[in-house]
Image (cartoon, rainbow, N blue to C red; front, side, top):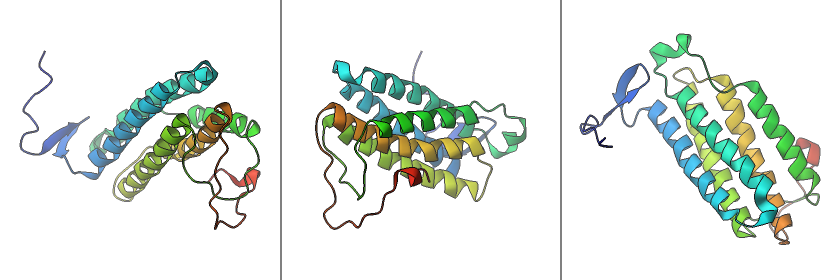
Length: 194
């Protein structure tokens, strides 16, 4: 089997149910989810030590769900009414439980922190920022075409997960978060989810 098809040589690609230009907003949105998935794979690969087993398992599950998100986004607008979506409210709710568990095992946060610390935390902060970019692309798409609401919710919650998981990774590595020195006190634990 050849991995090249030559069908996209003129700048067009196939959605589920139609063909569009490769720079179509829908293609851009699921492309961002694909990029995020690659970074999550990198973060999971950074979780080599035993203390990161649970985190690695969570990241692999997230990778599967990002494929599901991409699939849900890849339906042409004309197919949106006949889609059986793969992402449901339960996945975002599970992310919330993971976020709460990570937050319960990290020191209280009062100020903005610099992205970084351990290798795992740094990789997770990259995931967080790429996730926010993917979310912005989904929002832009949603202004013109249908986007499954549960994908929007999941991706929004996912960036919060990466923040909490990065802080947890620093705790596991015994690396202290570095506060942004000019930050005001802006965080209260119960206001983390946006």
